[in-house]
Structure formats: structure tokens, C-alpha cells
Image 1 (spheres, rainbow, N blue to C red):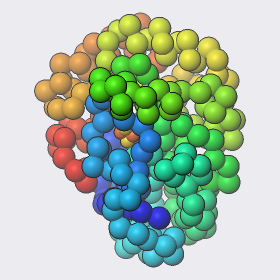
Image 2 (image 1 turned 120 degrees about the horizontal axis):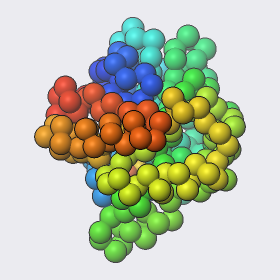
Image 3 (image 1 turned 180 degrees about the horizontal axis):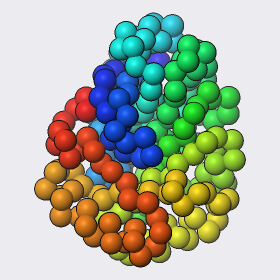
Image 4 (image 1 turned 60 degrees about the vertical axis):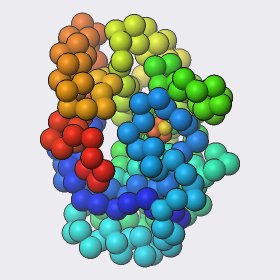
Length: 232
Ligand code: SF4
């Protein structure tokens, strides 16, 4: 499979924020989110080709139990079908005692993944690109309650929502109303921010929304610590 980068850092988001982890960033994403901070991983033909065995060996070089498979969008290929080799990769990692997190937008249901935490970040209207051609791709991949339900029922999940404005809460509530119950501590709201300064400005607003709604505040620790840099 095509890999954009492999690196060691701290998990920056979600219920495992702060956990030292190896990140495997797979190449390719069919969405075109407006505020995407990994546009360099959009191309499915980018990066370097690895077989599952070589990729497992690369991960093991870091001697780190936690592995995060991210993207791009790691669970699908360019045709939005299950990414070939991903099930085998996750099963090999799990067989070696690794804890596997998959970071996905929830664009498709893929079965048989060995995944300890399916970290789903459904994209709200605030992520739609302004460019009309990109907006078409994005619209085709907007959250599908049936797909999200299948993921929630098959895997141990967390839901992460990027909040741009307080009005996003209504959209989040509407989507959650069409999904099976998810424990409140596994539903996180994260400030939309591309820089530390934006994060500092928006964090108190999202924190206030969490206090009002009961959702959990979602860290963006990597942005806070290192700014908008690759491999963090
Ligand atoms: S789903 Fe993730 S990787 Fe893909 S465009 Fe959106 S933010 Fe970027």
C-alpha cells in the first residue's frame, strides 16, 4: 500500500491524547475538506509503496506499543472500496501485541480490521470546500448514518467533531440522533484551527460549548506543541 510517511510522536487528539504513538499515514483521500492540514496526503498515487510485512517491520523499529493508522483517509482506496492490505496489516500488528487506532472520516464501512480504537471524524458542513469541483467530491462523501452505524456497532469507537462556529452543535446533534448511542465521554468537540493562534482563540469557545452540551473537549495537542508541522 502507498504510505505518505511513518513517524513517532504523541497522539494529539481523542481519548488517547498524549500517548506516545507511531503514525502510519497512508496516501490518498477522496474528501477535500476546506481546512485539511494533510493535503499533501490527498493523492492515492503519492508516497512510497510498502507490502504489509515491510510496513510492520518499519513500525516495529520504534518499539512503541501504540500505532495510529491515519491519512489521508486510510480505510478506502481511490474507488472508495476497502483499501487492499489494510485488514492484513492491522491483524499482523495486533498479533504482535500492538494497540491499533484507525483515524477515519467514516466514509465507508470496512469489516475485519483488527482495530482497538476506531476514531471517526465525520465531516460537517463547515468542512465543505469553496471550490465547486472539490465541493462535488466532498458532497459525495458526507456522513452517511448507515455507514457510521455499522462502524459504531462493529468497533470500539470515538467520535471527533471539528467545530468552527457554535451553530455546528445543531448539525452534530442531528447526526447523533440518527446513530446508536455513543458514551458522552467518547464524543469529542475539537476547535477548528490551522495555527496555534487560531487554536488559542477558539479553544475557550469550544470549551464553553462542551460545558453547555456535556460533550468532551477534544485536544489538538500536536498543534499546541509544535504548530502546523508535518510528522507531529
Ligand atoms: S478527510 Fe481528513 S485527510 Fe481527507 S480531506 Fe478531510 S481532513 Fe483531509
